[in-house]
Amino acid sequence: MSVKTKEAARLRRRRRVRAKVRGTAGRPRISVFRSNRGITAQLIDDDAGRTLAAVNWTETELRGLRGAEQARRAGELLGQRAQALGVSSAVFDRGGYQYHGRVQALADGAREAGLTF
Image (cartoon, rainbow, N blue to C red; front, side):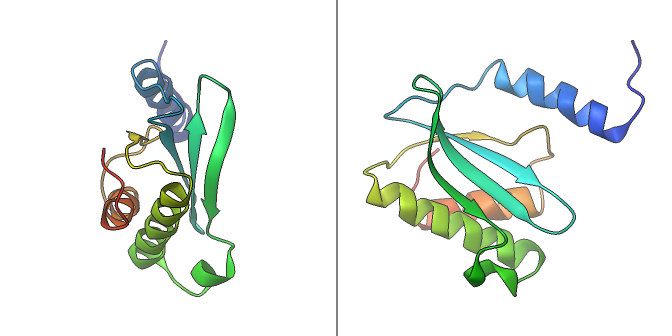
């Protein structure tokens, strides 16, 4: 089966990544969604099936920023929220996106805030 659209190709990559990455309560998964307008990330405990913390580009701190700076700041916010929950380690789920640009900036921001992965 050939992939017809960019979105379908991303979803195939996403499924391939998710087959290998799993989050637990002690080490949750950082799930990233990137759109043309902004970036969203969540800390997810897959064992319990719940979101522990989240950050969205529509928050007031991130709304005025663009591109990689917005993603880096979103990663810092997510890292601070994780630290408040007592989480210091996580696994990174890039969601089928290339680890480059805004996705990499979000990961770097989370590392600056104290998360390790």
